[in-house]
Image (cartoon, rainbow, N blue to C red; front, top):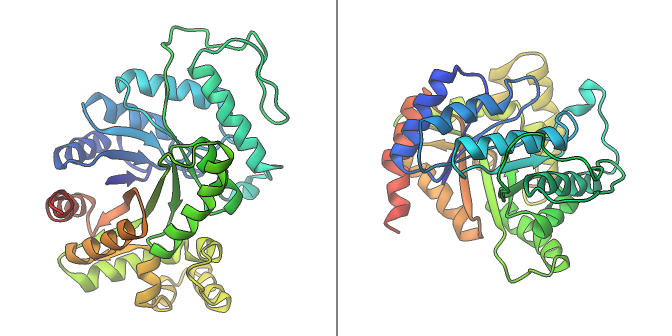
Length: 329
């Protein structure tokens, strides 16, 4: 299991959180790559310097605001500083239209981006042609690196991109979901790509990650989670064929958010809806939700920001009360 942090903190805070995450035994720490927040790399480098075991990576970068050449360079640096513990999360990206970017043929562009990143990290020779991203024969890092294989995760809610993940990536992440039904849908989509890649017998992981608020005060935790979820629920819920949420209800939630009425938006989110799109409640609630995801076939669960009513208390409850349950079952 893993934890993910938003890029809105100081480097000192990232170091503190990474030390705690490693102490508690999380396998992975991810840093979001959300539009208009801090770049992920400085936080990841700071965390790499104070940890020894935990895997680190951005979840996710996109190849349209950060070119694959630059992504490859960032991963080479992170892999060096972390001594081989880097992974790359990459996705199409959200809200790009708001800054004038409308990617054409995003699935093909993602295929080419991954090829270019691997080409550079592996120090492969020769030209790499492409319609969106390409490399000339002389394109290689102009500094010393060692050939390295960085595991790749594709973040998506889409069928075609999930199939690409099954073909090319080691993991596919559904960001903003805690719905076991979506795990089963995603595995079907990924199987199509795995068959195309000729490795349908290999294990491609499904990662489920969402807003997490854990506290001994169940009501307070779920109230906070409702407010957090209301911000992204209208965006992600239409992509979940297993959720079957009334579009009119999503419109009402979005309207309340847009008029800055967080209480009204939160009040529209039922308990069942909340449990599909967030981890919320006591440690026992989080354990129950996580068990359902693993039973549905998830390979990893990622607990996202804000973790608790305070981030340190949330991380402590996850590390001391939730994680131990899965080491003994």
